Amino acid sequence: MALAKDNHIDPKGKARWGFGGSVGEITVGPQTVGETGGVESVRTEPDNSGAHNNGGGTGDGEQVQQLQQVNSQLAAEKEDLQEQLQALQQAEQDRLAAEKEEQDRLAAEKHVDELKSKLDAAGVTYRANASTESLQKLVDDLPK
Image (cartoon, rainbow, N blue to C red):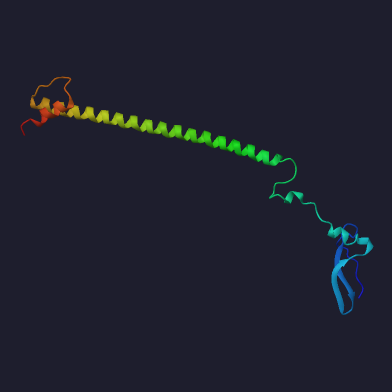
């Protein structure tokens, strides 16, 4: 059995794998004919020095320094955003406290106005600057 020329692989650039042997004893392996460049071109060990050191790469560690710098920038941004968040939360708490204080003040004024209107309807006199407690006592003492 004759071997046919392989037209799919450039025979000048790489060794090729193919069939060899005689009828009944065919083997598969590299064809080491001279025009293919021989097996040496296939068995050359690649220089994968960047694959060592857990991906540390080659060179002076510039990529690691860049990543550390980006990490530092992100940490600073995170800290800044956390401070902004705390300031916003404090402002919201202050706003809610002021709103509640205003509601309490308005409710107290309304209560005082109700007490005064009850006393006015009953014809009871009271001081203009009377406290809420004294007005409440006067209302409580009204006959029912």
